[in-house]
Amino acid sequence: MGRLNEIFTLAQTRATELQLPYTGAVTPQEANEVRQLAPNAVIIDVRTRAERDWVGRVPDAIEIEWLTYPDMQPNPHFVQTLKHAVTAESLLLFLCRSGARSSAAAKAASAAGYSACYNILEGFEGDKDAHGHRNQTNGWRHAGLPWTQS
Image (cartoon, rainbow, N blue to C red; front, side, top):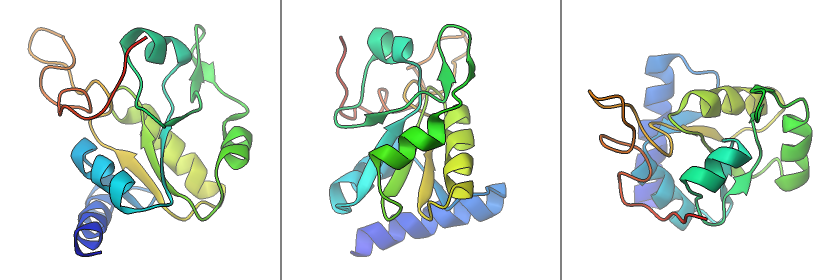
């Protein structure tokens, strides 16, 4: 439990520093550790189906679009779909491309009554490098964490 508590403390400190309206923010490496250490931890991948198909997937993640493809409009069924997929006691780790949509999803889940919502900083692909390319500086894939491609 020591490492898990350490991660949660860091995540909650980040939330306070960044004034986040949900429980905390974790790095991809921390999210992967939490998923291994906490039996009720679930990654909620909020990227579009197209992103997951073309770029890659995190094994065992629950996939619920935050924005719908191709029009990139808010998914009006996001919270309802989340409620069908996980219990209120679940520890939710939200993932998107770079950490922005997942932050919005964590905020919405918190507002819907989920008490353990964490955003995965850097996302699946990470920030753009000096040449405008992702997957080069940070993110889930760059960290060498588990993922598959169609």
